[in-house]
Image (cartoon, rainbow, N blue to C red; front, side):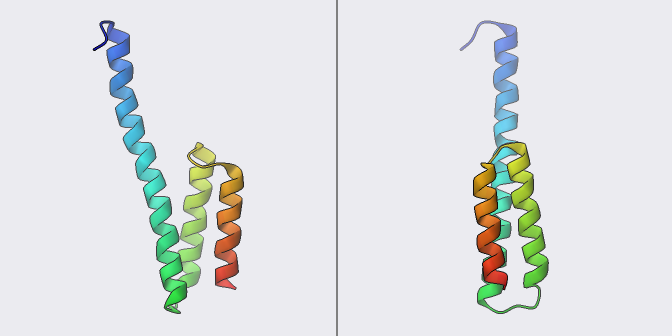
Length: 83
């Protein structure tokens, strides 16, 4: 247990940031899975889910949760599934 007040505060902040970051990554993965399920079932809303998934991927990449190259690779693979 740290003794310094600023170290205790930093730990509290880190816990909150970690939860927020994990939530954003989880929502990105969920959006991708929803799109892939829609494509597999030939649903009509696949285009809307694709836009939502790409938006989630771009947001995660801009926040630094995933690498930019991974974002580009994921978007490319999703667009191939859509076509």
